[in-house]
Image (tube, rainbow, N blue to C red; front, side, top):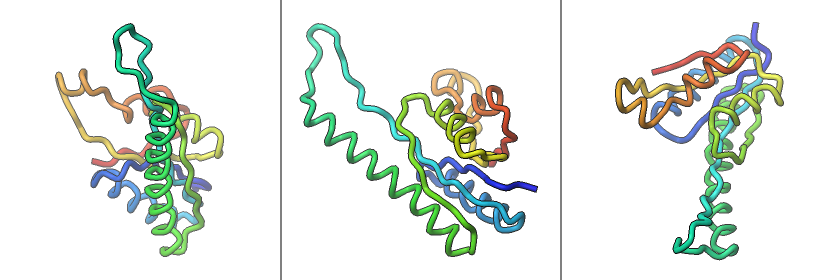
Length: 147
């Protein structure tokens, strides 16, 4: 059925639920699990009068974010391995989370994406956006959405 399942994780309770479900599905279907964390890039302002940040500070913050992202993806990988599911942990560095998820699905030849949705509606959805909605509408890989 499925050969490789991508599960994006950000460490939230809903994301952990998606990881658990993805592991169970991978185990049932004999699929490999690819655990992904998308790490943002440090925002750099080029506006006059903005507080400047040294390159060392930017590198330090980006390293902290990257280390946390690796830890989250590796935690999902460890859970999968403990359940007997072949898996790997990856991170992507991007400010466009949904695009990074779609790119990872394509790059790693995933045939299913399992992800959580917060189920925001109305003005909250407009203001906060929906990465899940973007993945659903712009991708060509099936998406299993959990709430």
